[in-house]
Picture 1 (cartoon, rainbow, N blue to C red):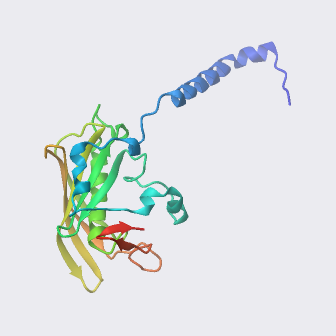
Picture 2 (picture 1 turned 90 degrees about the vertical axis):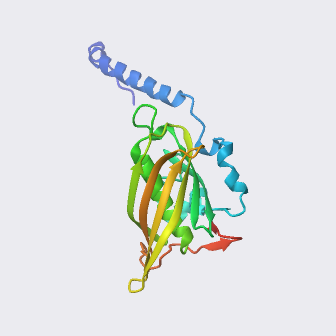
Picture 3 (picture 1 turned 180 degrees about the vertical axis):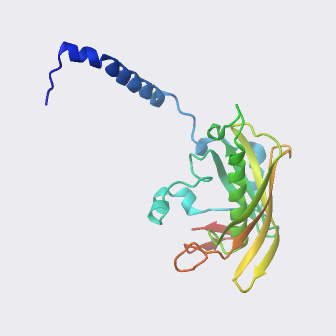
Amino acid sequence: MMIAMSRDNSAQLGPYLLTSIALAASISFIFARKKKPASEELQVPAWMQDIALDPSYKKMIVREWEDINWRESNGWKGSDLIHGPNSAVRLLNYFWNESEKKLVGLAYFSEKAESHKGYCHGGAVCSLMDDVLGWTCFAAGKGPWCGCTAQCNVKLERPIPVCSFLKVIGTVVDVKENSAKKTKKVSINAVVIGENGEQYAAMEGISIEGISFNKDGSSSDLPRTWSGSHVLEA
């Protein structure tokens, strides 16, 4: 349907038409800007790659981090806060050392985590620490989602520049079993370090293994298997 517009009406609408045109142009400009490479295309620095060759560490493989369609079909509503491809702070890989009960993660702090000019928000570091706390507990226990964070105390020791690659290391320091509740209180310490061992943050936390978020009371929502030597798979 065509609508006739008088000269007077067009004059009255002029400012609104110009505003709409300007808005459309600005939106077009935003989408036309060159995009930076996705996290999965990033080149991990050499100093972080040695752990992949260490036979005492095994790479952790969790399907809901890798397969979006599988993730959606199994009930997840969105992308993982730390392991998603567009996460502000992205955990690129985890490696588990069974004998030392230690989890080492390779993390990238993107420009999306920025707060002070050129530096990451402290909350981004805290989110990463919460993640390593949980997955250290899962790896030492019955596998993914077998518990949850109860306490996460983080000390921020130095600012982290955006676009930084750093290591996060979580270690089990104590396990106390509650036979009545059929749970375990797992105490875990963690640090975020740079290439030369400089420490950016430290964490002392507690995860409770055996806490269930599932209607059937099971401690893990999906069956898991250990493939090879302590490599988690969905």
